[in-house]
Image 1 (cartoon, rainbow, N blue to C red):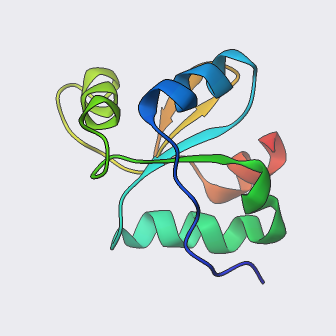
Image 2: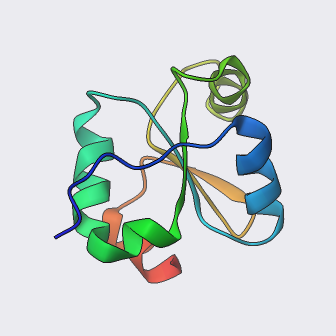
Length: 95
């Protein structure tokens, strides 16, 4: 099972990846829902683009902009559309 901490990219790289149709997960350390998603994805987690909202203020601003001002994670972009804390199975199916 894939349990390593995901490698994070910048918000700009995440936006670029979302524009290319990749699944992008905005997350933060210590978030139990983010960890559940990572564990559910297993090896597929390597195919997802991970953006740490605590490491990049632009990522944090993006998440707040699509969640009514709240920094809710995981926020997952699937097909260019942001989803707030989606079911892990939905994300797995999209990867």
